[in-house]
Image (cartoon, rainbow, N blue to C red):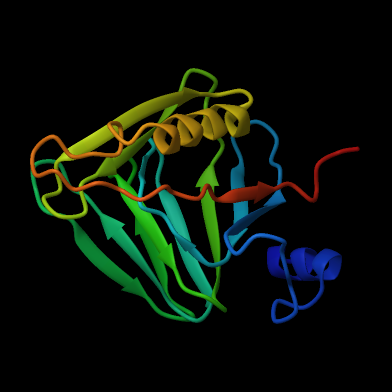
Length: 183
């Protein structure tokens, strides 16, 4: 059975899936060892950028999305991924998924090694200068990410660009739901 069939057999058709939050991820497969991880994602407008060492494979199942890329020393660039299209985001390239309502995508990435870290960076929406950067380690990533967002949202100084004065609004955190976890 393919990944989409497995996901929809446990959660309904891809057109009837629903979540409590308007921003959601569901992990379809929790892989052993070094095999890839599969996530289904819906509407998300992530102001923050993720920085990971491994490549990420984006497949747009329904609708379209924008993936904003931030090459080092350059202004951000946007890639539109339309329904049925794929895009491989190279490891080490900060990226920010911008998904719209009523859209679904599949993200595949390799399993991270224990020593790998993931970085969350907010680049100024006006001048592209870094505003805040936080690193999380493997192991209990959801609680670490929650703490990063709580810190960011609690302090307007952390959300303010020192170069141009832009202030980020409070940012909702993407919700990760693990429906296939072993019970």
